Structures are given as structure tokens and as C-alpha cells.
Length: 305
Image 1 (cartoon, rainbow, N blue to C red):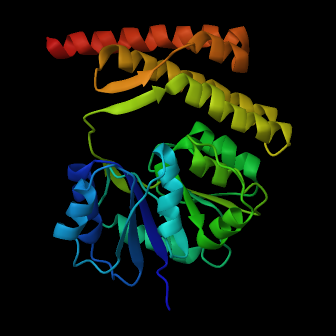
Image 2: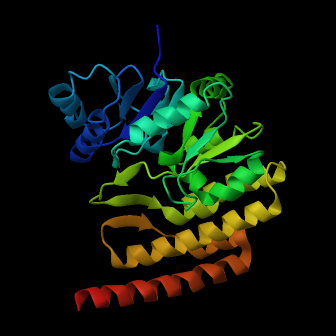
């Protein structure tokens, strides 16, 4: 049996209208169904997504759907397990493919399918331009992508590497399972970052439901500290990531203070940041928060005027 070059693996939970638009953006591209597949893992407790697939996409031969009983972000691993393509690309259900983007992604996968270096699709967030960037070691790669290594929609893994990871029964972090897989790939000879803007993100009605500070400033930074301890990254790389995470957290804290669509919580923020980043980290967090909050308030007032 011939497998496609690319599997687009989408974890989803009760976002029927959003998922419909994303699927249509993929299947409307002028690309042979033999070259790619879309794998949807649905861990909702209702049949709304199942009905969507049955009623509107049952004629699509390269669409695989499965209902999963897993909890939360572990659904990302379930979505990857569905894929049979050479390259497994994790994909957010709210990210619509831009015209021509699927063709480029398949071309990138085809170009690297023999050597199989880890490929990170940073979607324009790093401001590197459309040219693919290559790095000779994991430290240089991590210095480039920084805390974006948490972003599930940038993650991809070769099927062979994913199978190897799974065969070793390595536990994954329940909030960052895909990052656990990425951090397994620390000894490759080359790493690739593709910063091309493949997608347009749809606006979500609500987002959050977890303690953002605990997730990023505790769980994620603990994972990165382990890389530092094991000498896979340098102290300079760790410090860059730590600083970026503090800024990221402060920015979201200011957003949640203004925008009720986001339900992230920030319990014990000072204690968590102090434990991981020291008192300097706490000072940086509140300094950035004050700046971001002031700028957003000014922007909000100008908008009302």
C-alpha cells in the first residue's frame, strides 16, 4: 500500500463551525488526494463533529476521522497516531490553509523525505522570510524557535521518528505532548525551520481554561531546564527562552484583564515565576505587564474614540 507524503493531523473538540472552514480550506486546494491525508481526532463528549464528517465530508476518501476518549491536549498524540503519511504535521483546527499553501508544504516534505531532519513550520512568527532556514545542531535550532517550541501547529514529525518515540514508551507532558516528542529529537544532524505563512487563523469565541503561568513558566520551563542540564542547549539559549516566556505570560495577563473571551487563570503567578526564574523574573513579569496593559488600554480608548 502506498502512503501519502503528508498527513495533516487535527485534534479537535466541539468546534464544528471552525473545523468545517478549516477542512474546506484544505480540500479546496488543487492537490491530488494521493499526496496527502487529513486525520481528525475528536475527543469531545458529543457527536456533533462526527455528524459533520458523516454529513458533509463522507465523500472525501483521504479524510480519516476517529473519536477519542483521551483528555485535553493528549488528543494531539491521538491525531498523530492516525497518520500514515511520511511526514505527520500537527495542525490546529482553527487554522485555515491559505491558497497554494498545501502544495508548498508537500514540496518541503518531499525535499527532505530522504534525510528526514525535524521540520518546524513557524508560520511567519519568527520573521525569517519565506526561505527555509537550516541549523546544524539542536541548540541553534532552539535558539531560533525559542518558546514557539510549545506551539502545536508548528510541530511536525517524520512517521519513522514518531514510531521510534512511541516504541520506547516515553511519557509525554500532558500539556505539551508534542513538545515532548520534539525534545526527543535532540541528536539529529540537521534541523529545518520553514517560516512561510501557511495559514490564516480563525477567531475563537473562547480560549483558555487552564493556568497559563503554571503551564508555561513551570511545566514548559522545567522541560527546557532539563535540556540545559543535559547539555543539549546552552545557558544563553535557556535565558533567551526564559525571558521570552516571561514576556509572553505578561502579555497574556494584560490581555485577559481586558478581553473576556479568554479564560486563562494566573493563580500563584508570583510564586511560580519566582521558583523558576528568581526574583528578577517576577520583577520582569510585572514590568512587562504594566507596559503591555498600559499600551492596550491606550489602544482600547483610541478605538472607542
